[in-house]
Length: 139
Image 1 (cartoon, rainbow, N blue to C red):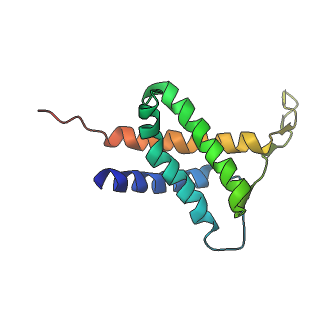
Image 2: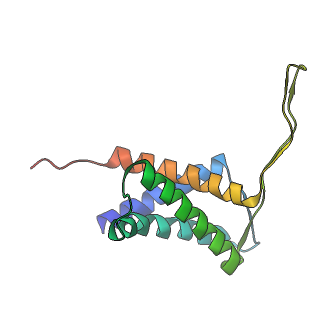
Image 3: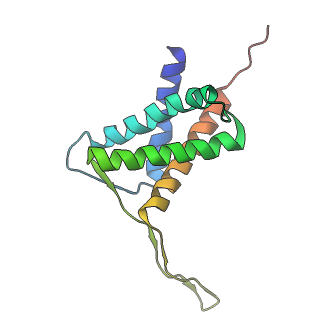
């Protein structure tokens, strides 16, 4: 029970700060639309480490981070397709010109890149919170 509450609390904190940094979703007019998105992130986070341990995939380290970002991205995309409570929009970076010295082209990212970027920020924040709360019991 303590582990579930810790995961839910860290998911809530990670989701809040991720949506402050980058939130590529257009929510429906319903008040519960953001809770569907939060529930998807929390449930996938809760079961991903256990699932990866069962099927003998990496459950720690960089490999786990990459797989976790992939699983979160797929879950958010599937939730978008079936729930119809939110829509992912693409991210556009405008052309930037710094006194004629630095000129960048206009960058258009599709919705899949936006989902991956959101998932990466969420997973990194959750992983950081999980890391700083982890303690090794000395026996």
